[in-house]
Length: 134
Image (cartoon, rainbow, N blue to C red):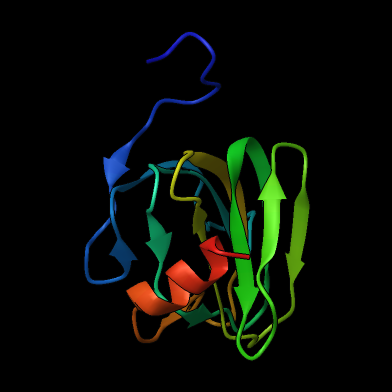
């Protein structure tokens, strides 16, 4: 673990839902006390989620680095350490690191019944590169 990391890097996330190298450390699991999960996600440079939605929304708290958050049909937002992103339910979006820097965030994700995420298509290189050029 690097000396400035708050949480360990965790387990690599599946290429089925992530481009590049992304890792998860689970912090809080859904259980009888919680209708949400919380995890620390580390995105190495260029890593990002696929497009996806959450039936009850999600909150991202950026704790290191910088990257992007983008909702479908909207301009991407640059995000950096200290930013909080409140994602509405069923909003198609993606998030991840920039090309040059890693980004680490805490993701707090609510459940609706037993579902917390619906994965969609990957963010294309063209989509990602267009964000990087702005």
